Amino acid sequence: MKKFVMAAIGGIVAGGVLTTQIAGPLIAQEAQNNSSVYEQLDLFGDIFERIRAQYVEDVDEKELIEAAINGMLVSLDPHSSYLSPDDADDMRVQTRGEFGGLGIEVTQEEGFVKVVSPIDDTPADEAGIEAGDFITHVDGESVLGLTLDDAVDLMRGPVGSEIVITVVREGVDEPFDVTIVRDTIKLTAVRTRTQGDTVVLRVTTFNDQTYPNLEDGLKEAVEELGGMEKVNGFVLDLRNNPGGLLTQAIKVSDAFLDKGEIVSTRGRDPQDSDRYNASEGDLAVGKPIVVLINGGSASASEIVTGALQDHRRAIVVGTKSFGKGSVQTVMPLKGDGAMRLTTARYYTPSGRSIQALGISPDIVVEQPRRDPAATEEEDDTPVNRFSRSEADLRGRLDNDSLTEDERRQIEEEQQKAEDAAALREEDYQLAYAIDILKGLSALDPAQ
Image (cartoon, rainbow, N blue to C red; front, top):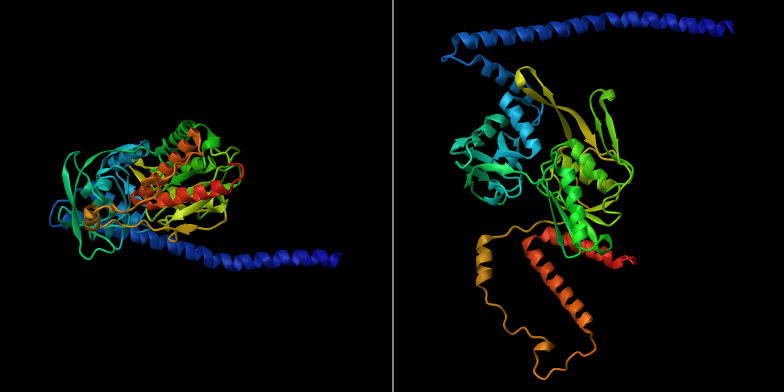
C-alpha cells in the first residue's frame, strides 16, 4: 500500500516538474506571438497614416478602414464579409422576402462573379441567366480584381434602369452580353401546384415565409386533389434554390420527418456545436417524396436534401448540388454595420460534410438545354398526317363493353398521359420525378 501511495506521489511530483519545464517555453512563445501581432497592427497603422498623408488624392478615411476590414474577412473564405450599414439593412430586407436588383445569387470564383442560381420569375431568370454562368463585365467594366461586394454594387441600381452583363457559359464558345432591366424582387418562397395526382412544392428560397408557405400550400393542394388518399406523392423542387435561413431549412426538413437528426453544426470550439432533431409529425403522412436538385441548389437546400436522403425519406433526382457546407453568423457591429463570419460546418445525419463536394442525386437526370434554332426548325416540321389507329378506320366495330364511367376514366387517363408528355418537353427533370412517383404508386397495394 505504501509503495502505491509513493508511486502516486512520485507521479504527481514528476508531473509538476514536467509541467514547469514545458510552461516556460509556452509562455515565451505566447508572448512572442502577441508581440508579433502588435507589430503587425503597428504596421497597419503606419500604412494607414502614410496613405492618408501621401496618397495622390484625398481619401475617405471611413471607406479606407471599411475596405481594410472587408479585405481581412474576404481573405478567409468567399462567404465571410463586412456589411456596411446599408448592406446590413439590405440583407435584413432580403430575408423578409422583398428587395431590389436582378434576381441572382452569386459567389466569387477565380476572381470572377459566378452565378449560384437565378431566382424564379426575376429579371435575371427571364433573361436566361443560368446557374454556373460567370459574369466577367458589368456595363463594359471588368469585375476581375473586385471584391464580391464591389461587383454586386456595380450590378445594383434604380428599379427600371438597364444593365448589360457579359456572360461566359460552359459549352458556349464566346462570351455574350445579356441586357437586363432592374426590378423590385418579390420572393414567393414556395409555389405549390398539382400535376396529375402529384403535389409539386417549388421552394425558391429559405426566408421567414418558407415554412408557413409550404404548410399552407401543401394543405391547399391536397384538398384540391380530394384528400391525401388521392395523392400519389410529393415533389420537393429545390433546383436553383441558393439557400437562406438555417432555421427554415430545419423546419422544412422536420415537416417530412417523424424522428432522427436533421443536421449538426460543428465549429472550432466543440462547445459551439449544435445538433437539431426532428419532432413527431409528417405533413406528407408517409407518402413518397422526390427531391429535385441541381448545381444551383446550395446551403439550406442541401441541408434539407441531405436530411431526407440520409433518412431514406425521399429519392433525390437531378444533378449534383453546389456544395456549400458552411454556416455564417451575422454579428452586429458598432455603427449599424455587421460582420458575416463563417463559424461552423454543417453535417448531414450520416455525418458527411458536403463542403465543396455537393450532394449526389440517387438518380442523375440532366435537364436538356433547348436550342432556340432547333426549336424553330421543329416548329416548322409538318405533323405526320398519316398516323392512324383503329378508331380512324371506316366501318370499325364500336366498343360496347364500356360503361360511360369507364369510358370517361379511360379518356381522363389518356389526357393525363398527354399532359405528362407535354411536361417532358417543358421540364424533363420534373416529369422524371413524377414518373417515379407514378411507378411507386402502381406498386403500392394500398393505392
